[in-house]
Image (cartoon, rainbow, N blue to C red; front, side):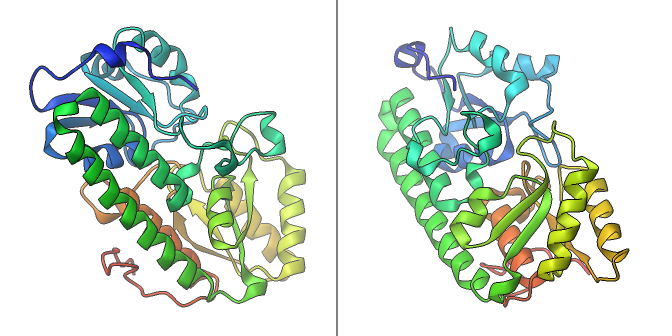
Length: 309
């Protein structure tokens, strides 16, 4: 994890809006919400982009160099950008939004060998800690508007809490035996912990890992044994492993369908409700609840979800 360098304490905006560059969409969204009109936020990775595999382009490096402040997720999510971020942090404030989250909140799977699961945004209460971290960082960078940043962060945290309450309510309506979430890779462990679901991914925590035949056959056995009714593809990961899973179950004479597409490492299209952090998680919660036999409104928590026929 790359800490905010001491240069952050010396920096201050010379004009408004100052320039902020971010990595993944989930970080971009919370920074825009907390900064408001004080900053112009440029996100590097858009809809459908897999941060585990992403390599910064020349234009990305230029955007990072032009920025006054940089925010990224951390916990090795943007692994291929680490060297670039370290170099730039010598001259300007660079913040990992997960850096100040207490270790007791983080998950440390055995296969990560001492590293934490980076998909913290899947738990809205855990991600609220990242929102608070952005508020503190911007207040430090621009103390003249510190109260505004803290107020915006507090408002956003309240919305995260309301979404978490919605998630607990609708996901608890899934029949207990059906509370199993199987997706393309292990991006949903925080989601499962937050909402009481057993979670399994065909691939590991990073999409760089390969799903072997043994893993797929093992999941087929679990699905047949437990009567799992639906599995899920992800917007930023190839569906081929999930398709192999469905075919394997069907070859055993059992029914299995794709319950929908979930957002894991990237949000929806820019300019849509699903292209916001709250919208992407509302989509995931609502899609999973409905696909696994629970009760949730078709348009989700705030009635804003797109309806796909």
